[in-house]
Length: 316
Image (cartoon, rainbow, N blue to C red; front, side, top):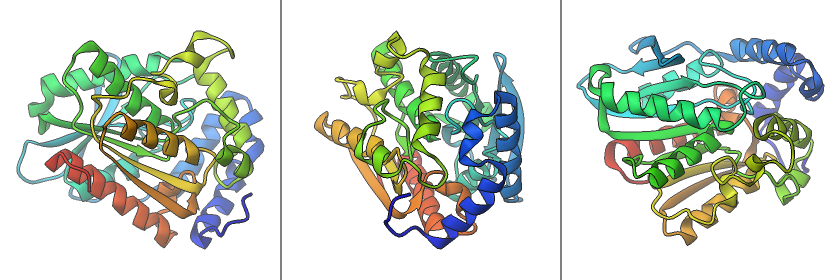
């Protein structure tokens, strides 16, 4: 673990999390990993805000969960991609976070239960995201969504999916997202960066775990996916004409440098970026928001970025 100070609420969260998913869980059989992660998320799941309307729907065989606040509609929409290393997670594991985002930012959130790796490596996730976004745009008003005001957001692996979708929309000449919100995102495949080495054994995500997730998502090393800028956005040499991005990184996260590198590349390409770095937090800090004041402050900043980008088309 890094020697820098870590928020005590974050560490308390990690202590409880580790009882069910210790670092060595990355070596467990996949069904056991998924069951353990589901159990952890259920243990930390907060109640949804009561005023929300929540609905499960099927989009061309893809399960989605829609969170709608009350009030005037249509509202801006958010297509949300959950984290879990592309291997773990579902609409259940991120239910409370998406519910609170919808409530605090006054947006309709559509969380995507995309296909998981390693059974479905890249580009399955990108294909699923295109289908759901197209559905949001075609059926948006029936869902209370303004189809002209849609942003994408995602945590960890969901950050990669957000960046991939924006690049793909640009390259296909399709209507672009209004903004991107990248939450402690995985954007590179270089596990020798300073933050990977410094935080190799950090709380909530280790370097060894991240290597496992990358290999599950990208397939055999040396394969085409390891060179695909959609799969590994930090490899891209063409980041111009992407929507404005809010990026949040945690100092105690192996992925910290991934977000910093992407920020620099976006700025060099002329894309507006706002970066928030959390000096006392670790990966998955959103899940610790109700036991850590620092994590709650970080979550509120994310909600404000979602609100600003979706409602006003600008960074906070």
